[in-house]
Length: 260
Image (cartoon, rainbow, N blue to C red; front, side):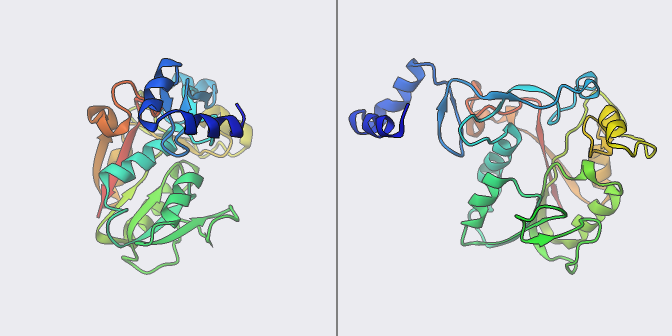
């Protein structure tokens, strides 16, 4: 459908009737970023045997993950909805550090006048600062909030990174620290002898990963000093796409929301 036809249909069809009509035509999903109505989200994720064997959440193959219009992933949509409904980031002044920023979430946060927004990454040129999170060059208690998702599985000394995130977070501040993880494993799997890209992909599911997190991830965060709240969006689905999961979220994925 061309843009001209879409514009014409918007003019001809009253706004109040559009959701009903789209549902009747089979558009049962919706992206909270681009607001597109979709018949379904697209598959995404790796079919690497180790990810499938260990049922890794957030890293393995999912049927209903990728928005075909704006390319947002299920984990990015969950992050945005959690920020929207479960934090005060859009309401109160915040100094926020966003490590390895997700593009669509970053665009939204950058536009917030109440947020002193800083992005950082070790490699990406799109981030404002080049930063190694095992050595964050900011004083203690610098940030009201930190977002650091799908980063720690890349860091050899992840406990040092967690310590640095805790150190630079203000007392009373919060952070969202998502990682791909296996609910089937009791203990995080690491093997320092896996140093080549092929060995790491076979062992951890991706060439640049150095571990598979497990049930003890919460304990690791707590040992760094954080108070950990594990949020399961399926227990409060109203703001997250309802029972029909219209936003295409991963029903197994939890949000690791921590405080100092």
